[in-house]
Amino acid sequence: MAEGDAPGVLIAGNWKMNGCRADLSVIEAVADGLASGAKCDVLVCPPAPLIALAHDKVAARGVAIGAQDCHVAVSGAHTGDLSAEMLKDAGASAIILGHSERRSDHGETDAEVRAKTAAAHRAGVTAIVCVGETAGQRQSGLAQAVVLRQLAGSLPDEASPANTVIAYEPVWAIGTGLVATSDDIAQIHKAIRDALIARFGPAGAGFKILYGGSVKPGNAEEILNVANVNGALVGGASLKAADFLGIIAACR
Ligand code: PGA
Image (cartoon, rainbow, N blue to C red; front, side, top):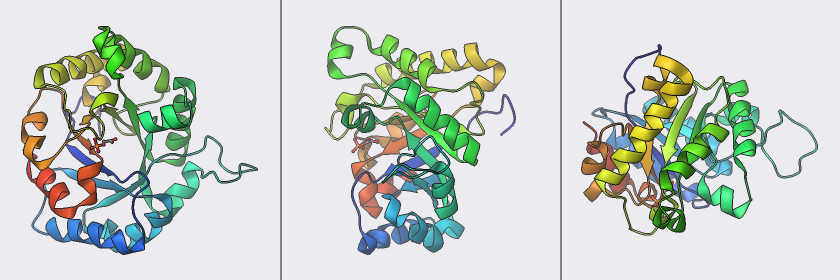
């Protein structure tokens, strides 16, 4: 995307640690549901063992496939890890990085997320960089400060709208059924937009900023209509084709 272009809309599914080969039928059903066209880009990030299989089934049918984490190195003695280059080779066109579950389960810091984001860029894969405050941080009035600190620390200088998507996911809204109000979403997304423009100049206006946290078919339209919301990162509702398609259908 050229500098200054308005961002399009992306609906991204994060399957987390859910799904075996039998569940590829969900991804196929999503592709079937898109046959008549979607008004947004569609991405599904299944567990790593399914990436190549999913890519081969649906990448040519309008569903891009992504991964949920990567190592910073290209290759080497890192048992159990996967490089961005390997994930790209398997068919991933994007990698979710710095998800709050990685930050909490694995103690990932902003500096590590920044290095992983640079690794995704090195491999030629879009980085979906997640930020978001905890309930306690919001109650203490720190939501915006935390998000902006994570954003600044997690993005390398070469980040651009062509290689990076931001996902604002309040931790307390993930998997809980709680959703931030439209006003709260608008406020944080505007703060993120302003910070991107301050750091990257006019290109900052072109980054997609996704909202994530209990997005469902019933609330997607309202969320997607909030200013500076350029799509959604969807967990639970991406595991059912009908729900995920319902969210995709809410795109303008
Ligand atoms: P959820 O998860 O939609 O199940 O709340 C969102 C996410 O963690 O990306």
